[in-house]
Image (cartoon, rainbow over all chains, first blue to last red; front, side):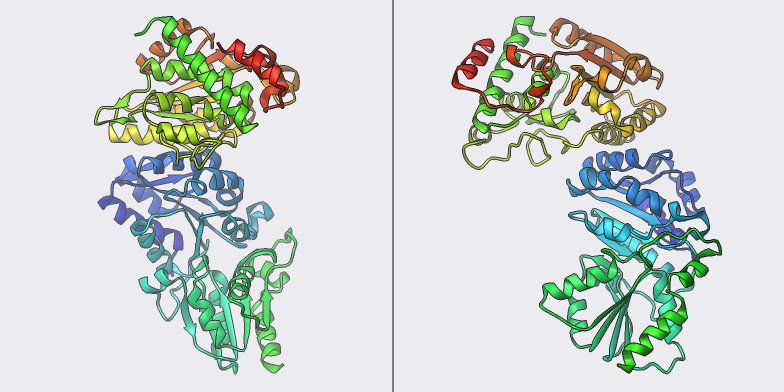
Length: 307
Length: 269
């Protein structure tokens, strides 16, 4: 089991030792790997306090002086609290500022809705010039860090809070560069998903009677890779699954890409409902309430394949 | 250092040039632009903002006009110093030009895109931090408006700058006392500004923002100090054009008759 944040930051640390322009900024958010970074290369680390707005503005200043800047904090705050800083400071000047959005979806379920990042994808992908990628396992997180140092740009890397095993087939740098990885092949139904919902979807399909179902890990939700649309063209029905609210997230991104290429196909979206959750019980319980439990996914697939 | 008449003449040139451009464009923010004109002249012609020794068409130090609606104030200076090509200035409002009322980094000599208030100081902190870690002696000047003090991000940045003792940042607060709906003290009190900024660990200076002797002297003190510093420059919104002075409505451009344009031109002779 791997923590995505540790995989990401460890890779960043290894790169930063060779590249003195790599800077890591934290708005008081930690990780074991971050301790190694700040202990061993403190001159490339900045603690910004719990001040996300200043952190992003400052990242822009560092980037204007040629630095490759990584801003790290808890997903809900580093995405929406400083949304205008992302737009006006980093986005508008198209700077090499990569924001690491840690704990997306309902990762912080126990903390309540202030700590959910269930609208972040819609907000972040709306910013002009942004690249938005999501890790579905530790290896993807590690590769995303390597790619972010090699190809610095205005970007957001969305990480899950909880540790997980690497999924099969294992991710490669080629997957990262093209923005997706094919987990299963099929023609009757193509499921496009990412992050935590990918492992859940694969678990549903594992050992089930559902066949001829493709599963695509859409690592890069913005820009949507044009090759994805080519792949979807050969499938009968499309379905998206995401741990986000219904407006503007992954399903919207895929639909936009399809429609822009003139492709109209039956399309089903599984999302969280348009509400915040105040219930206790943790992430799995909330996903159950939100109709994203394994049974909900299985039922939806069954209905689609039966029609 | 030049005599005071030199700076006053440069400031009149800046106001005259930018006024004619606003007349041509029928847009701009004359109130805030004119209030900071003398500060800008002191910064550049007083050689606080130094030229790059390796390339005289570039500047060595950074200037961020965080009150982005007034950025055009420094265009005539950058043209005069050979940083912005004259053609760009001449074309503005007539033909294709990179210049805009609000500055952006595509314009030579503009170090940060600005417009939305409250970002410039944080960006300046990033520059300053980077320079410190490179062991570079580059300076960062950032001009903020008092209206920006309503943005919480400014106070986040002040906290950060003081903690890291970023003495290579020099803040100039253009205090013209007016925001769009009126006087800052009656809209939402900011005073005591000096004490508030000082309480964040800054060395705070105060002077008349139209008195070149005082501005130059204070900038000299600030740039030779090893302490984060802020100059509260008390200014007059619309300074230099009588019908605009201390008038909140001249935050934006307003239509003028030919006779009124001539009156303004007389003020700027």
